[in-house]
Length: 222
Image (cartoon, rainbow, N blue to C red; front, side, top):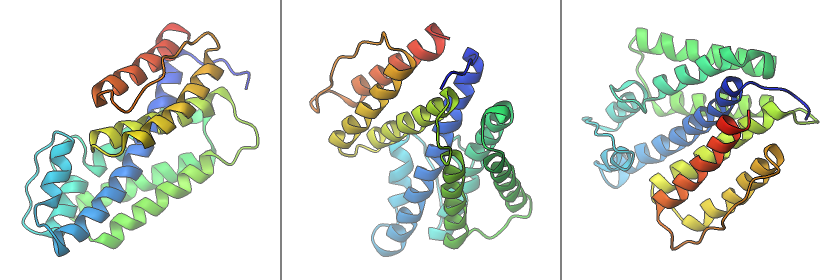
């Protein structure tokens, strides 16, 4: 695990993990919401993005897919993959070569789809989701983890909790993930001290606690 990283590099590895997890989580939510729009509630897409404090408009389920992928808001799939690409380029020396190539290939696929005004359907979204799963596999196939791998993993877990709480899902699940976050933080910063959380605490309190832990590692200890 002995590996020296600058604060900037650690931050980019962390955000690479966060954006990859954000993309994967959003793709799953988008596919589920697409089905819900067709079968249950035509406003399900608006409700999903409202939880993320984003307002979107669409005419039907297919239009929802396009808005989710290329709409004019900061959580569209194309924007997220571009963030992933930027962080991958900066951290290229610390990530798997195949994972890097897959990220660049995926970003080009989305770019072409936008430029060509590609007709987005559910199979296209599922294809992207499958690619992300492959990238995670490429990033995690090392037998021994380096410090860089822990920062990517940390980003993945923090984003998982973040999205889970923003969508007002079960707090208990988020608190379980936080146990693993604490384990990684302790590995990176053995002097870290934690206060255990309870389900009665607000979503904001839990998120603020996570951010404080990350700041101590990336800002104070690098």
